[in-house]
Length: 255
Image 1 (cartoon, rainbow, N blue to C red):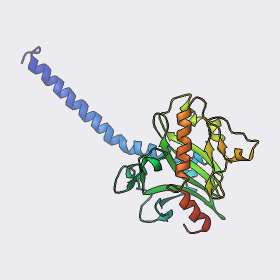
Image 2 (spheres, rainbow, N blue to C red):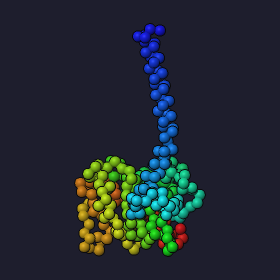
Image 3 (cartoon, rainbow, N blue to C red):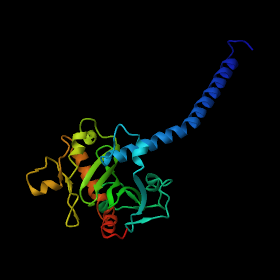
Image 4 (cartoon, rainbow, N blue to C red):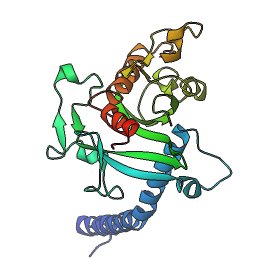
C-alpha cells in the first residue's frame, strides 16, 4: 500500500487512537486506588482542621486515630449500626430517593433539595466522654454548594471550628470562607441559647461588646449571597431536620 494512500493514513490514525486509549484507560485504572487514598486523606485532614486538631508535624493518620466515626439516623437523631461508616457514601445517598427525602422549598433554607436519611459524624472522646463532635454541613451559596464540617466542643453548644473543603464561590469574595481569620472568628461562639438555635452569620459585623455578639459571626464583605447561604446551611444542619435531635440525645445520654 502506498505511503500516501488514504487507507494507510486512516489505519495509522486508528492504531494510534487504540494505543492511546489503552494507555489512558490503563493509567486511570492503575491510579484509581491512589486517587481514592488521597481523597480520603484530604477528607481526614479537613475533619481535623475544622475541629482545630490538625498539627503539621504529625502524620494525619496518626492524628485521625483519636476520632471515631459513627452514622446517625437523621430521622430519629440516634446512632445506628445498620450502616457501615467505612463504606457509607453520604453524598451519594443524598441523591438516592431510597436513601433520602425530598424537601419542600419552605423547609429547605440551605437549598439542598434532598436530605439524606443518614449522616456520618466524627467524635473525639476522652475519659469524661465526648470532647468534640464534628458534623458534616452543606448548602448553596452564590455559585455552588459548599461542603464542610462544623465542630462543637464537649458542651455541644460551643463552636470549636468550621471549614469548607469544596465550593466554587468567587475568590476574594465568597471564597473568603477559606480565610483562616474568618474561620477563627467562629471559635468560641455559641450555637444554641436555651435549646434554640442562636448562631447567625450577619450581613455586617458582629458587635462583640453586646451579649448577642456571642452568637454572631461577621459576614463576608461584598459576598451577601454567600454569607446568607452559610448562615442558612449552618442553621439548617443545627436544626430539627439536621443534628439538633442527635445533640439533644447526646446531652441526655440517650443517643
